[in-house]
Amino acid sequence: MAEETGTVEAVETTDVDTGDTILDTGDSILSESTSTDWREGLPEELANHSALQDIKDIEGLAKTTIHAQKMVGGDKLVRPDMDSPKEEWDKFYSALGRPEKSSEYEMPTENMPSNVTFGDECYASFCEEAHRVGLSKDQAAAMMRWQATTNADAKDQFRQKMGQTAMDHVSTLKTEFGEAFDDKVAYAKDAISRFGSDELKAALNETGLGNHPAMVRAFSKVGQMIAQDEVIGGGGNQSFRLSPNEALEQIAEKQLDSEFMTAYTSSFNVGHAAAQAEMTRLYEAAHPTVD
Image (cartoon, rainbow, N blue to C red; front, side, top):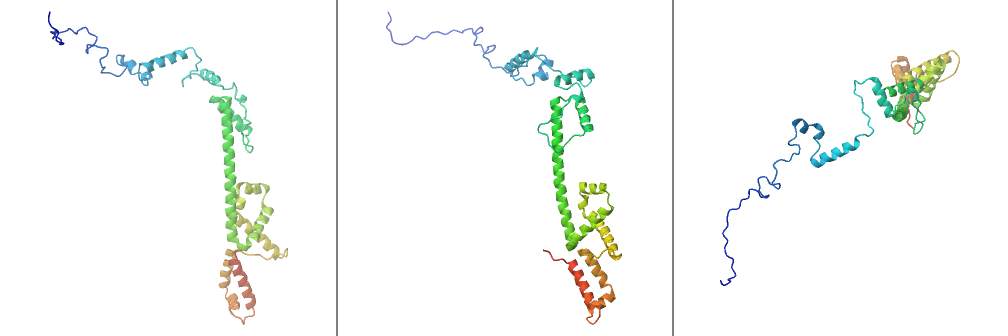
């Protein structure tokens, strides 16, 4: 009996046939695939179909298929093609909530601005167009509310702009007329009162032209001419204040008047005092004192 030495005898190895082992790296299920596209192997017309482009893997395909299956048998509304007959479009719009007739639309009452109203003709025209394009009652009401609100905002902005423009016009006229501002405006109002119709007055007020400098100047001249004729004809006794520009014009005329200038410059002339008083009046009107 051989004595144990604590060593393991070498075993002669032989070649082992690994052809049928599951660890074979050729066809093993654990082998690394060289393709990552799950569409590989599908016919080209399926692999390239747009319905599959956003599906990343088999799991995504399964989820999409399940979702589609749930939708089968549900209520579905198919939009007609552009070439579909009017009857199909009518059914489609009716299913979306369009009333049978345009007269069945209703004007909304909530959240509507109080300073905007729809004329009967405008309202009827809107309802006809809303019905033609297939709006539901709620959609039509929303559009009416939007239009009314838009119009109200536009009115407010226009009113504010007119107010600012009127203030600018008045400021311009005050600078131009100086101390004669009140008189000039009074002349203009008198002329409009005498010759302007109610229609003209309404137009001047509605458009803001009643404050436009060009309009005020024109009517003021007419009114002043009327006042002067009445004074000359004995119908009144009124002294006319001049605007700075008018005063400058008269100063220039006086300076070209040799007789007046002789009286103005010569203290020995009998008309000296009167000429000085007249020129002083003109200079004060041309250069009014600013309060």
